[in-house]
Image 1 (cartoon, rainbow, N blue to C red):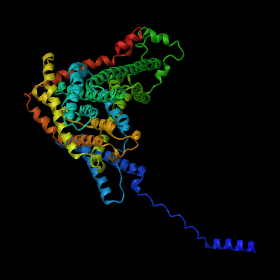
Image 2: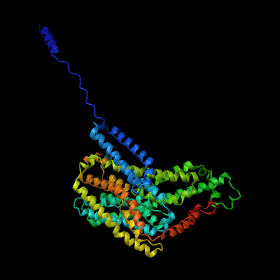
Image 3: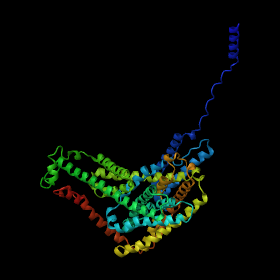
Image 4: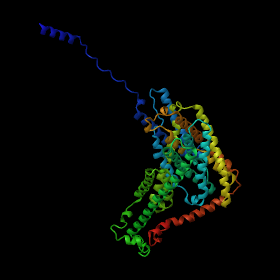
Length: 546
């Protein structure tokens, strides 16, 4: 009976149990919430805009007096940003495009090709002939601009001292590309060399200065006096500048030495023109080395394609060595490019010369246009304006414009007058005004530095600007807006302004000087292409000939 009752009770409980409902399917995430898909959409639009810039830009910019390459690319970026904004407003998906690049990508991927090509494409004779005045503009001018902008930013009493110093270093980087596109180097060689030389040294100096500020605040205490902070910053700046340049010189000379030995070894082992390549003409240290295993036969096998890869790898090696030692890889790249163009380039095969020049030019142009497009697209992203103090943004923009102009006026005219004292080629008032105008423009380097210095990164656990601190978001928004204004508005009026300055010149004042300058350049470049057979006796004579 008890067993029967227990069995009945169990059956009753079994009948009373209700089967559990099947699990509900999880709601599907919208397409725009997938970071991979969002990034793919961003990259798709970016590639399409790059194709548009490279296919249409060269046709449009020479045919209008208003547009430059930078302003056209930024306008194209604004169109892309408007497309993304319309997708977000009228579509069901929200594609976050802001900071699709990591902040390190700007510094490690986009900036190196720009800086290296600036050094590689620099006109060496003009640079060394006017090295003193170019150094004053590029190095001392950067320091003056840094101090003026930092002090002016501090007067707002809104940002911390560290932020003011970083803003000063970032906004000290000029962008003279728009002016260089208008200047005629044959008509005004001195002016062109100063504007170009100042631009490349200024960019490298600003990057070194920003790195010095970061390293200083990592090594000293928070309570350190401001005078001590400034002293540490400038000491670190000059040490980093010197050591980074030394690494670039060593890597550049090493590449020149190997390519020079390759050129002789290739000609010697091929047996071309045996009468001219006699044993008496060859250096003894190379002749003796043929008795070693293999001699220099390994170097003679480096063809044109391998030479291009060799230059690329050595430049990257210089960058990695400097970064590993805690120095400035960007500064090292600039010096490496300068030394390679002066020595290594003339020892390459003709096909390798053309390929190397065009390859690095293409990479530099691609990086610059990418940054300009990104500026235009990112300036319309709503997330950049939700976590900022708009009053502080507009106040900072206005203050930066005034302080940049003040910094240019403070040191440009005194340096120009000093140049006129010691140089027989005089700078006229139109030249001085052009130098002032060229130094007021800001562009790709400033954007890359502000992203690198203030944007959230992986170590902070977020890349969303809405989750970044308010101060950093305000600085990024202000710099982005200022660069867009200067690229589009000031870049569009650059051609008319330079033509107005040219109208101040006396007729025929610089054409004769340009023609004479060009003849001297051609004469001085001939020794750089002298045959390896003129070297004798030792590796020291090789370096002397280089």
